[in-house]
Image (cartoon, rainbow, N blue to C red):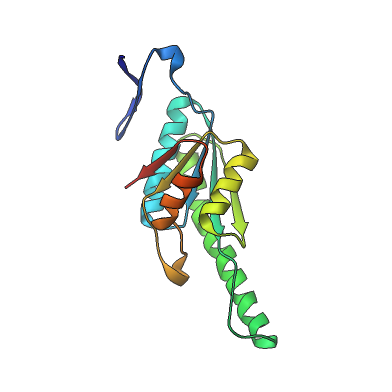
Length: 168
């Protein structure tokens, strides 16, 4: 079966086996981010691929549900601080991807999915938005700095019904 170069750019080559008419052409790419440097590099790759293929692009950041071992008014205060910090982090990360898209001459929709675990939120967004490719980094930040990729990339791979491009 022949191997065909579908598209090529400075740091990305998309190849496929089979005849050109059999090659998958992605129409809507979902870029998952946690705001880390690696996620931003993955976003750049996803945007580059989107431009090469003429695909729509959506970026998503998922923030986990807040949980605490405390209750009452103190818990509410911590929750409000967590929610604000999560929203601020997501706004920053998604704005960075939007700016990369603008520089590349692309439009990129963005969404912040709150109170879900990362892999599940990415998969749900992919289904809800009708995406046919997920692009994400191989690992991200941990703990309160925004648990995301790493083991989450493995979860996305196992849960996804669409191809997943993992960038390092």
